[in-house]
Length: 336
Image 1 (tube, one colour):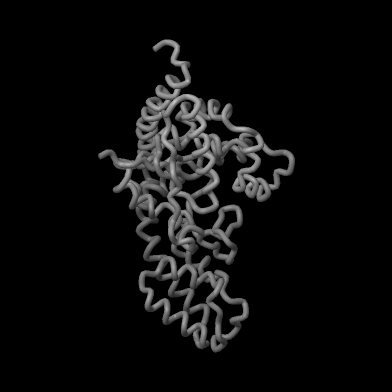
Image 2 (cartoon, rainbow, N blue to C red):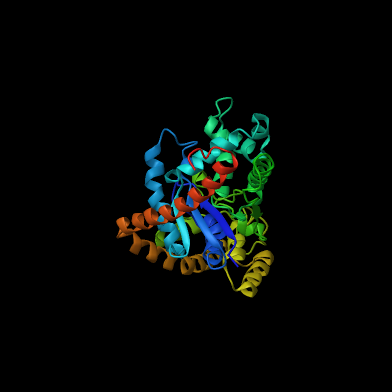
């Protein structure tokens, strides 16, 4: 039987970080052996709120690709493509916009939250408001059965499913209705920032990048948020909301030792510096091989861009097949 298809990706607005690694990249390395996987560098989506800074988006296409290859995504079995070079996605988006109301777009809770975060007020770029429709086209152009997302992104997949059902009802059953693939561990799905904020984010400056140097990682770990009331080594400490212990729960495979550290910290006698130094050892062991592989790929950017070019051509062929079916169903295949 044919493998099920997965569509996933990232906006090229910066290098990828530990939050991406545990939230999606690790899983993609595993999933590429179980599914037919398309990974999209979503430059069109990045331009919805970076339209006046296209150079930022352009430069980060290569940076995101380097991170993909460094963590072990294999371009021989995963198709890594650039969104803007698949014009069929834009064409399908236009057709979908006829099937979606403005009121429905405005009700999308994820979009509402993001509009507040970005402070658009009444000056909402139309492209930003309708990007869930473009996302529906991303997914359905490749007949994706599954889309790995966090809980906050489920409304987008639900809206995609609505669009698919409407299209199939109007034009006949052509499109695949996708499902969200949500991580079971919410701690992994949403890694907090080094400052203890709810999410690691480029815009908040609380990230550890996959490309960070050994010294930079150490510096960021030593400045991590812990228990603000744990002032002396002998004081009992709180592990709830303590970022260092959250990271140890996620990254350290020696769960028994982490539990020992927690008990010691809670009863007092264990300083923050000692725990942070241990976390540094854990993270350095994970990130060093990634950084070394990344540096090797960095030496030959033309090779990396050729990988993207070849994979994008493969992706476009898939999208063209889908659009042939779509045009046929919509009765606009005039010259067939």
